[in-house]
Length: 502
Image 1 (tube, helix red, strand yellow):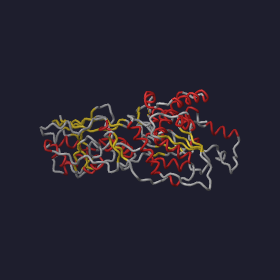
Image 2 (cartoon, one colour):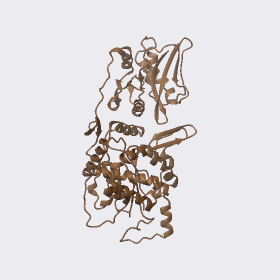
Image 3 (spheres, one colour):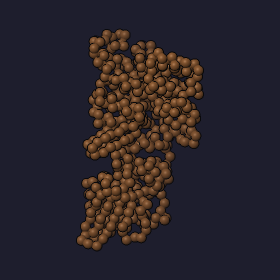
Image 4 (cartoon, one colour):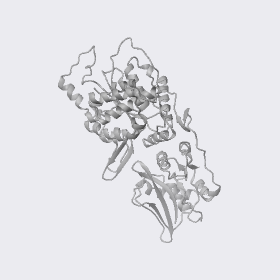
């Protein structure tokens, strides 16, 4: 018996699959066992044609391929090359069991690229299950970005056979490539950024309070809600926040590339965080993921390490808004189905935008609101208190005026965010301020005597919940970081309190 390793998806993560083969005497046959999908069973014809096209005589034996463990359903065409190699190398004595082999075969023996290979291999690497692998040569540019893995690229089945016959002299095809973007180095780790600002804050005139709030939200990854009349710039600011978010380390860049590959997009490896903006008519399954047989990732998962933007927030269904409370609090989403149970990370910055009333003119000084008190109350009641309690910063937009001018560019705001991020990193903090645990709040959110008095007064006067108190401390920590202050001062607490929900 011979064996190599491959992988398949179990939920959203990769699971190692050991491909075993036996060639025994008996009536010639070729069978694959181990809950193989249709694509894997079709591999028999591709493997036969690839071997015969490369002048291999297909062995007249009883060939059995086992995909272990047998209780996991296997899917994908990446098993083709593993199966072909086990048949072609049955007679050699060398041990090949420590190799991972991925690749789809053409009928002529060429090894083809599969876009699903990148998230599959990245998941294995993140779990530290993979050290060296044979992969399609066409995939090397993308795969070489993954650290701590040796990749051996092959163009044909014959190249893969020659490589395994000469394992001792085989050399990796490429060195690990660097991310080609500028970076900051903080305590020996690189954090990449880009100077591309496709949508700039210079386009936003006026709205100084909203700009300041968006700067704080971006620097600390705080959930934020914009409320204002139609056309005052809510969506405009939200779309520009993506370009001023903190820089990214290699792990975050690779995670985003994995999400792009899961969406069947070509990974860009650009240090731009994701921004997902589902329509308010989106279903619960499309937002959170799901599926009756195989759990698919939804918008919440695709927003991981980036922004999840809900425009026209009250128009989303009640089920979607209430289900959003869990990932906003725990940074994880769990999907439970009869056939599968999946948990995946959803660490995002939530940005919401809403009108003050159904007609939108309640806060407008020039237009008359056409809504009744009952309509306004029903509109507001679509957002529950437990949901709103998970919003760190609430902003009421100002009226647009003719004398409004541009104040800050995205480049200037991004610089302030980066400086605050570096300041927090040098403090020994590993997570964003909005994601601090209770122990981290005690450690990093140190208040001056005046700030402590103000916070105690606010707790008493506004009857703040434990969650609200922690959110005020986290927001004030970010404001202090922007001012490069180790201790949270009175002014920081007051500004943080000004952003709480009225």
